[in-house]
Image 1 (spheres, rainbow, N blue to C red):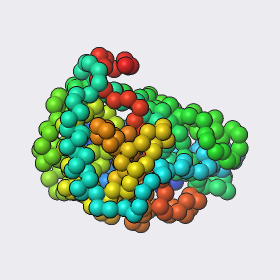
Image 2 (cartoon, rainbow, N blue to C red):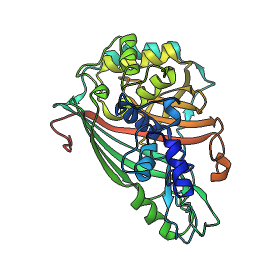
Image 3 (cartoon, rainbow, N blue to C red):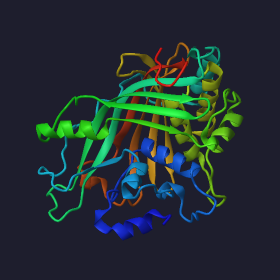
Image 4 (tube, rainbow, N blue to C red):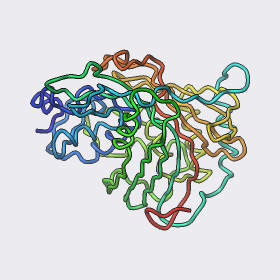
Length: 361
């Protein structure tokens, strides 16, 4: 069996991935790894952003492959779906007037960024430490006695440590933090923390491994990122794939000034970016805030925002907001949410090179 729809039809309501609604980060993770692991004999007829083409160890793996957008309650959970983290965090505040076209400000910033030099540290393993919040949509497991509340949500604070070597060895430590605002029963918080704290390790498919030096020409860098993974010929890659790849790039790869300048020039050239003004991230660092919309045809519309240091162009912060979805299996209102809704926010604490996976600066 190689199709997620067929698997779900077989499992019926016992499928733990039923009605999952992944975050954009989870969707990117699943898509990249699923594409890379496709075997030549596996037929693919649907767009890759609507299905998970590789299923390992049954439905539980399918639920993991979908990403971190939904968690599942045990069938005997007495409280229905917990709302342990009740409210989204405050977004960064902008100081200044109305938004303006971000093309020229981004290109000017790229000139500053290009002079920043190499990333910090030494070694062959990229290390990125960050902190932020991820939105979870929660579905109750279908059982003989369904709880009254079958859908809920949580905004979970995290600290992330990620390592990726130049030969594709990868590790991610995901450490949930206590809630800033609570709801539901006291025990719900402990349940959430147990579910979402994990260490993930794997070896990337060679088609997903980045070269030691990234292109500093924006067109060449865009071509490299658009070519990551193994795609069936009938799947057309759009700019939405590119922008998701750019967002993922920051999660695992230290960038030199020239490499990051190429990223900024890609955004200036291929997105209708706006310069929102000066803003301060949750860690108290000031920078220039830019935003742009990314439409994933047939799936969703996201707004990305990037906060760059005006001094050296370093990325301080990014967030994504779900503006709308096209025909989701579970309407967002069923979770007690409405558009627009924060999907994820990340502040970058340290980015650079270390000697081995697990090492810290």
